[in-house]
Image (spheres, rainbow, N blue to C red):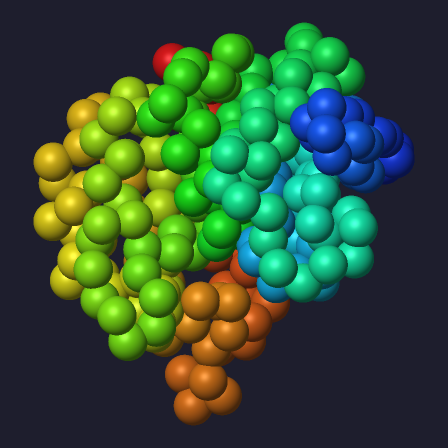
Length: 232
């Protein structure tokens, strides 16, 4: 699917927090953009990771603009993430920056793994101005081998439409725990399960599918969900 027409990619900077200073960001906006997704990276890789780049390109082809950004630790070249309060503040600052750059577009937010969880944490604590829904590429419900739904307890306080894109081989989110957790959340979230995909949405060769096909599936599901949320 490709309905984007021309796509403009621009580099930006914004203040993440007063104490941590500025971080980098990338806005990818197709001429046909219907909404803007504020797209946070995961714990171990920044906004220029191949997965983030590939998703942004595919979403642009489906009429979804993206605003990718760095958390302060990644901007500084450090491996260990900042403490949650700093990450949550950065999410809020990124959403404000995105709104200033493309305020004519309906806003969605979320991210890959940790970035998604920090976005939902921010939304559970205080309204994210202008954000109509949250989407997660591999929500990290627990550490590998430590099955628990505790990290998802805050989802009941979000109060927004949510999309969860999850692989059946994801060691950071047991579907046996995620499904009952989401069953108690309102409005009812949408769960899109990718058969055979791990936390990075890689699939085994014997699955008969490629990682590129999985990315297309993810972005098709995202675009369909986003269309419903922003029209509503």
